[in-house]
Length: 409
Ligand SMILES: [Zn+2]
Image 1 (cartoon, rainbow, N blue to C red):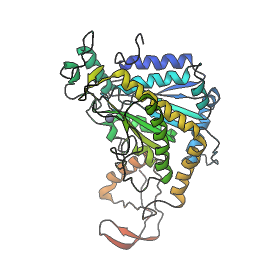
Image 2: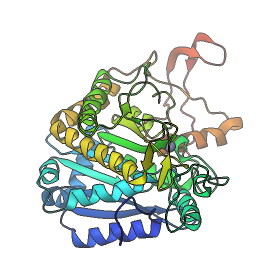
Image 3: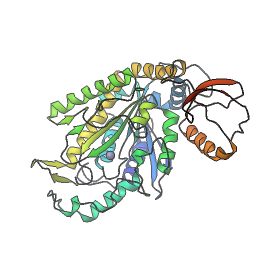
Image 4: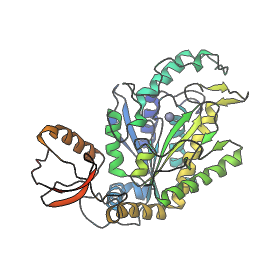
């Protein structure tokens, strides 16, 4: 980069160059894929890092993983002896900019030939790194910051570099919050990303964020109560991961909290969408969003630097991979069980939902089925017969006939 990570904000094009450089020089253990482009034409990237053996076998690992989720079209039996997949998503909110810097450090640690620890983890783990989910928002923040910071940064909160102008870098080009868009996919970034995400369906997913400058670091477990569909295993493993992070934070004397904020209800976040799709989905929150700059004096008089922020996200990145590797077999087994249970037992009061099509609502049904397809939710077209069920319009139990008259869109 020409500088130590955390001493400058890296513009997105340089991040892209770095990932391409590493992919070209570590091709045996890393595969880089461009999965799309933003509204402003910036590339959207995901890189897969694992042992050379796993990278050679990557497409088979992916296909087998979909079989574990009952989503395979080839109907071959799923193999549970397979690497766990850990997906790390950085910088969905553009002005929470430390995490993309941490993504570069994480990549370096994974491909560094002298790092024997990560080499061990990657034997049974495939790591996917998306270095920046919102490049347009990130560059809006970073380009602004780099244009106002002096030769030396000013840590006083009164300095201009800590007052980001409207609309800020949080949202994408159309000022849409991409961390509300996982399920609905109204934005091009989400549409392209969820497609590749659902082609993989990792066992562990982390969404890296930043919060106000005065907060300690937040990691899992999330705030209770949890939605009832979240399984005991998904609850327990969040605790296991949190304990592993706590070990490193305690060693370094870094403050953190768990359980107090960040719920798991709304289905369209970067933690909940993966959870509702069988993963251990989590949000990690570092202090520093928007106001942090390269260094800022907090309310308690202590100074928070970008180097600190990057180190914390880097530490939880590696800790997540470590603990997932140590539990890879169990992660895969429980993931398989999640999808088998969904088919054999189901969750909730009803086994199936019937959507009625009429000429008047045909367009809406078409749009609805498109949303189902994007989320890989399986459905069938009725072929006739009778059924009994709760009618949401009349609010009564009713008998009704199913007609096989639906014209597939
Ligand atoms: Zn955020």
